[in-house]
Length: 111
Length: 114
Image (cartoon, rainbow over all chains, first blue to last red; front, side, top):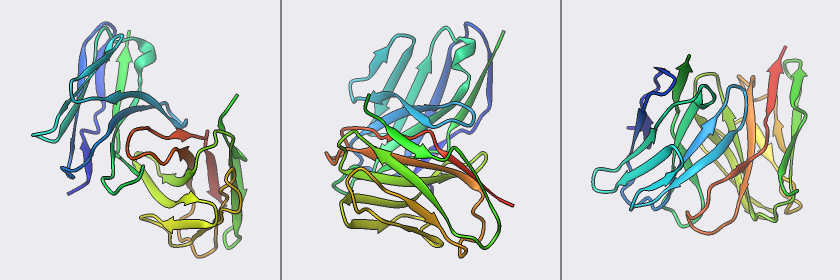
C-alpha cells in the first residue's frame, strides 16, 4: 500500500464549480499535513497546511480526519487559474521534517 | 529575497557522462532534499541532508551522489550508473522542526540524456 494515495483524476470541471479532492495516508502517527499545488513543468508550491480543526483560505477548505486517516481539499467557485495538479503531503513520523508526497490529482477547469 | 536556486534549468548530456546539478539556498534552512519526478508520477526522494557533512539515502539513491560541504549548498551528481536519468529534478529545503513546516522548492532542473 502506498504511504499517501490520491485519485489521479483528471477532474474536468466548468468554471464556478465546486470540486473536492481526497487523500488517504497509511501512517497513523503522522502529525502534519499539507496540500501543494504544481503547475505543468513547474515546482510544487505550498497551497495550505491542514489542521485537525479544518481550515479555510479564501475559496479553499482543507479537512483532516485522523480516525479515518483521510485528508480533503475543497475548491469553491473554480477559476481557470486553478487548473493544476494538487499534491497531498504528509510528514513522516520519524522525528524530523521528512515529507511524503502523493502522486497528485490533476484538475482542469474549462470555460 | 530568500529562496532556493537550481541551475541549470535545462541540461542535456550524453549517455555515460556524469553530470552535477546545483542547488543553493539562502533561507538558513538546515535540511535539504533532492527529489526526482517522472512524467505523470509523484516525487521520489533521492537523498536528504539535515546538517553539513552528513546526508542519508532516500528511496532511489542508486546511481546518484551528493555532498553537503556548506549549509547553503547541496549539489547532486547523476552518475553513469543511473540507468534512466532523464527526469525533472527538484531540490528543496526546510527547517528541522518536526513536521510543522513544509518545504520550499527550487524551480527544478530538467535533465535529458541524449
